[in-house]
Length: 232
Ligand code: HEC
Image 1 (spheres, rainbow, N blue to C red):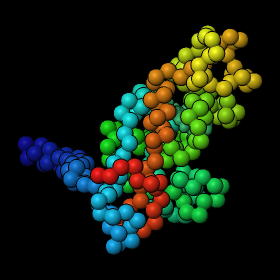
Image 2 (cartoon, rainbow, N blue to C red; image 1 turned 120 degrees about the vertical axis):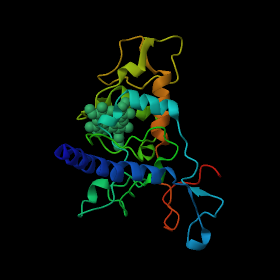
Image 3 (cartoon, protein in one colour; image 1 turned 180 degrees about the vertical axis):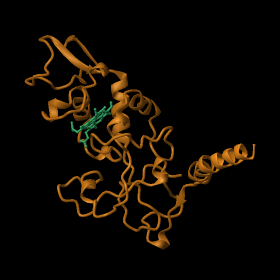
């Protein structure tokens, strides 16, 4: 019987303690995390009426579609801090899109996920990290083209196409203003037809374009984010 009791106690110690220390304690302490105020006196560009993160633009509908389509299987939204000189792979993941950015993208922080219903840290990184993808497209149409047929933009792309988020329909009158410019490509629909984004595709694109997880961090004087979106 004593053997059995020691066995149970050891079992609790080997599974219960790590669970408590690695999951429960951090979860409780993270729940108390509050936005941080900026401070001009400490070198921030914003004064203390602004908070990090600046009120994030959260698009829950787009977020739900991102979840439902399984984008998280191939895309992370988490930039790790630099370690062991493995820094180069973060180039191009931030706001500076030049081929040799002066600074690598900043690592994402806990507060960057404030407001998200679900934080899509990612399962595998088959595709590029999307934490700051909102900076990488010049037009909505480019994002739509990418989702409708990734190979229309990059012939070598291995990303699956999400054609079910688009309607192929007969052109009426002058046609829709949001029809994708596929004329002349091998993905052009049959004559007299056009490809138009569904409401879901529009929401997903809104969500992707809103992804800019690089608000300036209070106390680190370098401001990397664009102008503040809203006052708290
Ligand atoms: C099977 C893996 C896979 C899945 C699932 C996937 N992607 Fe991708 N994605 C990729 C790869 C690989 C690339 C890089 C090649 C390219 O640009 O087409 C990419 C590129 C992208 C880019 C361009 C990023 C950039 O920096 O230019 C966006 C945006 C994107 N994916 C969004 C999505 C969204 C939204 C979903 C879900 C609807 C999704 N992906 C699902 C593999 C995937």
